Length: 86
Image 1 (spheres, one colour):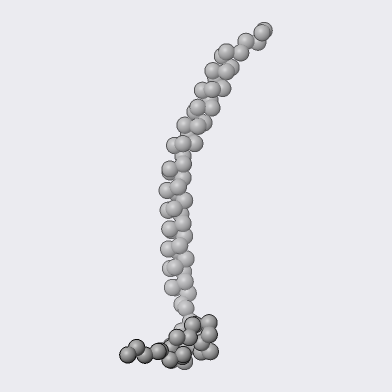
Image 2 (tube, rainbow, N blue to C red):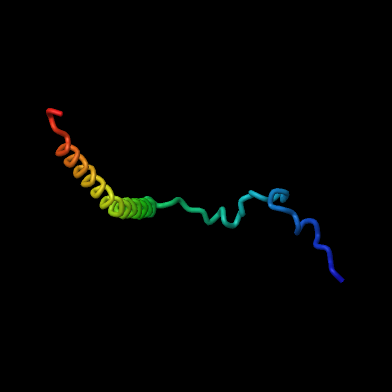
């Protein structure tokens, strides 16, 4: 009742002798990428990277500012409690 699939249909991609061969029909459709397209993709990547860095900085900046203020307060308080002559 159940049929065994043929050995060629169960071959893994690593075992297929045709794996990695270019498809000739698609090879004929290949065209060079235009400079306009590459420039647009690079612009989008730079824009997203810049946005990501600005967002990251906006989240880290308040913490850095509070840490700096805390260090200043600790420094001022330690300077007030230390006496020169003691």
